[in-house]
Length: 428
Ligand SMILES: *Cc1c(COP(=O)(O)O)cnc(C)c1O
Image (cartoon, rainbow, N blue to C red):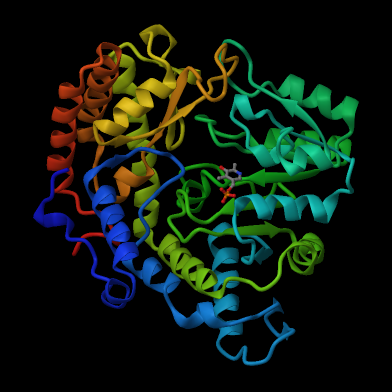
């Protein structure tokens, strides 16, 4: 592993003394995040300010309830922190109500079930292998075991969501909740089309924008407002905040949403996370975040073009957002083999199913890549042909078992990235 002057690990003076073993692991992770090209589309680099907020004494405080209505005393500051986060969320996303307490995206979605459905009720969501999320009613998830999950997919040729299927299923199955959004959807989500179907069948539409929240905030993806009844999102993906989540809604659903999160599902909110969400939302409201969101998409499109030019098959033929799903079938390299080789080359991706994948989910045909992290480091479209070249060389090396070639790429990656210090990591 190479080291270079641009990525000096942060020092953790107290931790280094109290627990050198753990401190060393944190330091190693900082080095890894500095030296590797992180292409996992659900990951990002938070700013130093967001990172600092997560490490504050706010974490010492118990605050069950909501601002002005707590079950514990001493909320003079916490109430103001949470109100700041709520008001900023409302402003950034243009919503009437925001709950910033869900611990993460999966609990946020479970709260939506608790608010709007009873166990055994039917819910309609995108199938996991088609790009949906586990919590959209997939069988192994609590949501698929405690509710009756009915699943829609994409069309075989275009890999676009099949709205005829969504409408037919909605009319026939009469779901209480319809989920839209996903984890491996490279194209714009048509919230208006989902909204129309949900209204027709009297279902609550939950737009799960976990992946694209930063793009929505920055105006680089259409907003689910006013089409969705509830908007669920993580805060740590393209939104570039701490690990956490939010549920947003119309005022008419505010009570149901709040009651479901607390006392329905959770206890005390993670106030240090709430604070960091507030910081991230302040950053997301700045004009520079609009530039960031648009740059993420421009980079993804440029990367997709460069991969197509190298003969790669992309699910849906390209991308509208931050994410590219590569089908490696024609390259004769399974997704997992490619992902592990790329990791050795300093390029971090995840293997992923592609729609109608003939292979098993634990050994699928594709890899999923995205541009939020590299854009946070300041890489622009001019660098995407090189990124595509590295991916191509790594996949070819994987096919041949050429470890030396992977090591060479790893060095090239670290060398380039030394010129693009990552937020929160380098002394930038
Ligand atoms: C990431 C994600 C989630 C879950 O978030 P966690 O914080 O990992 O629980 C839910 N829905 C979608 C669409 C996601 O992409």
